Length: 97
Image (tube, rainbow, N blue to C red; front, side, top):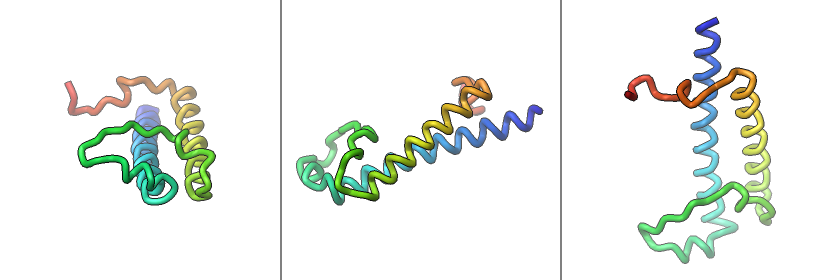
């Protein structure tokens, strides 16, 4: 059963990276499309924290679909976290500390 849990945790870690990449790709799509006017307002080195909610309700059908998938991914991750009692220490890199 130990290896089963390790695989669940490994899968959860993978889903974390998928979620981060999904956000990054959503930002890139939006900044080159729907939000290109905002992109022009930024200067190199500017920092802005995007949120998936900013990609909802746009005229871009692709961003809408990606946001829907993001919600499904979040639900899946929450379920896995709950039914497997995944804690922060389970997600810590073995090379830390």
